[in-house]
Length: 102
Image (cartoon, rainbow, N blue to C red):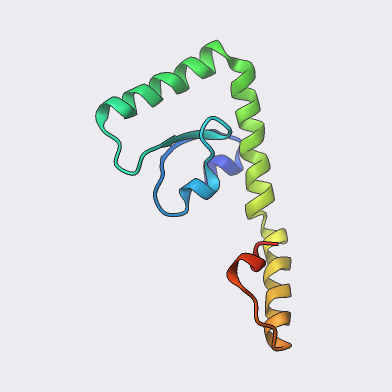
């Protein structure tokens, strides 16, 4: 997440919450949960070629990386969502998990 917050596209495996952060060819490269050496080499080659040959797309990926970070993980935004959640719980509200994201 630190790299994405600095507008750096990442290469990651699709385990845990990673797919919520990394969108393949949008803000990084997403490998399967247990990639083999061939898959790793293919993605590394793809990332290298993208940066060198298609720098316009690479720049778009950098911007998208930062945008996704700000949209989903901005500290102030999450603080407000968490406070609203606590207020609702205090008032006796019953929230479903997916409603917390809004």
